[in-house]
Image (cartoon, rainbow, N blue to C red; front, side, top):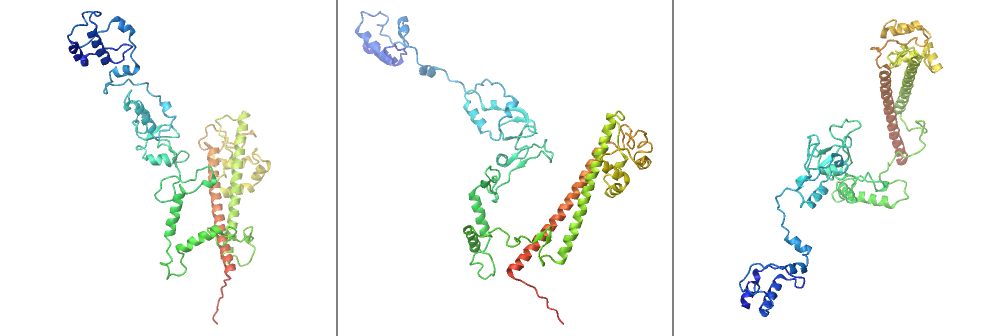
Length: 470
């Protein structure tokens, strides 16, 4: 009987009491105890028939310990892998633009951490973004610094490596105007094939370099030195710079810190005191042709300077005419729709005619007074103004405050006269200043070449002797 009761203990599932934690062990001990004490137990437990389960009494339930957290986790049913997780609230579009989106590795890591709650598809933002007006489908994107919209690198034809390393300021095709808004790139390393940015943007000036690192700088120098012939290959050549000679020059230059000349400096053209106000202080520096060229160029630059002075006077005359119109409006003589064009502006933007106007009594009186007053001769003003706006429109009034001015409202011939004339004069002044700068640059180049030639002739003691046949 004891053996029959102990046989089915492997199939018995029984909760343990607070004294005996093991289920199988307690069942085994209980069977053994029941075999030894038949009088104290009820007849139901002395039944030798094997049972599948044993129910606990109410007293045993009260004295049993609560199940631990680990056992509760082990007994909980696992989630189905195919069940759809509940989507959280959709991200606002404004929060998307606060962070950088050049690398989606952070977003991928966050999606992997929450994989037990939802799939990676839950992170997809439907947008719309980019010129394709598509979603954020985890492709690499870059933000525009003007409109702050996000764009796929494939749509704007920008690679991820280039966008992360070389783009200093990205402007999308919709915002690019070619003047103020355009994509700015960083300068790449000077070593061929390297797409890393050069160290030109560091705060410390000493650390700046046209290379991205010191190793690339050394590699560039080695490649340059290898282009020179070796001593063995140039044994038969005369006056050829070899690799050994060039390296020797570099070493000698680094060691001779007290020398006035270093590798990279100009060998000639470093003499001081050869020029005074653009003219040579010693004889033999310039040839006759060079002296003639410098004299002609200096005279032309002086004429260009006088033209710039005339253009400034034109701008001053236009400011005075505009002030006179504003005064007439404040006095109630004109309205805001009145033209206010003065006939004395007819010669503006025409340099030769304006120079003649400056020589007239009217022009001298205007610039002597420093403002534009009533014209001295209104008849001449009517005749000159009649060609532009018709007789009776300019200078027709008897009021001195508006005499010589066009009083027509919304005048089409003079529409926007102040802005048009001012812009035209500014363009002429800019062109004249550029021409004067070109002439000055040509003069400086000629002086440098003449100085280098003179210094070399002095150091080498060269001379030319002309032999004339009798």
